Image 1 (cartoon, rainbow, N blue to C red):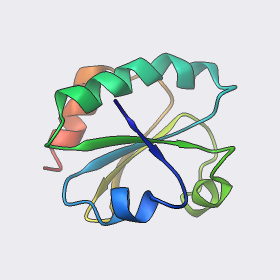
Image 2: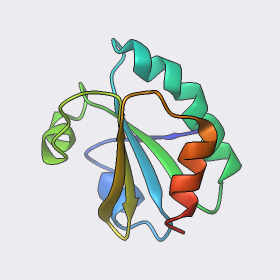
Image 3: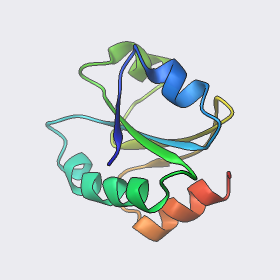
Image 4: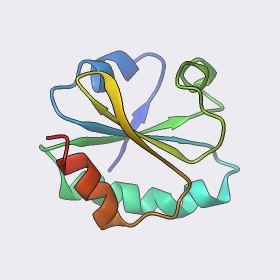
Length: 106
């Protein structure tokens, strides 16, 4: 299951993480965001211990959305050692593609 990320825990869960983290910037009203949600949960389960998957609701965490220049959602950012290493905009991506991008950062 993907972690719920907020302004409060983003630093500890993402920036300070010792494993790669896939962060999904999404919103309740976004159809494609809802479509990709179950795929992200599967990736989180499959890669448990090797990588993390988290979700940032842009309506609840506007400061994070601004900080990471979120212009359209879903926006998937891949973090390693606190830095953005890759990104995908939109929901047209498969579970295997997401896993491959995350594992490339391990």
